[in-house]
Amino acid sequence: MTASFKKILIIDDDEVFVKPLRKFLTLNKFQVNVAENGMNGLELQNFLNVDLVITDLRMEGLTGIDVINNVSKTFPNTPIMVVSGFINDSEFGGLDGYKNVVGVYQKPIDYEKLIEQIKNTICH
Image (cartoon, rainbow, N blue to C red; front, side, top):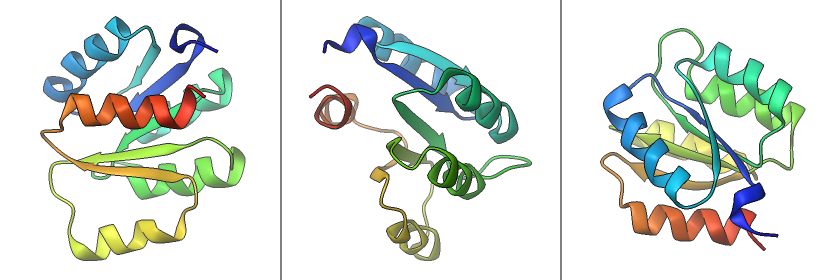
């Protein structure tokens, strides 16, 4: 199956980060949806049943950990990638317990490494 059929949901409140990432993923033939907070992200995931969730950790309201908890329970086979401007040891260590967290990236991220991980994860 080609990337053009794969749906990615970005959940992040940082428009400066999201806008170029969305463009990059779209140019790589992914269908990209964006939610500016965790609650909207979970609503979109329930509606769209995406192939991959990319979430920030630190957001107002529902945090990235809340998103990961919910997606892990509701869609246990949906892979999740975490992006954050700053990941401390306790947050990073807390991600180990989630089998569907397939990558953790610190902002700014290396797009080439990210796209390689995405393709390895959902384009097999």
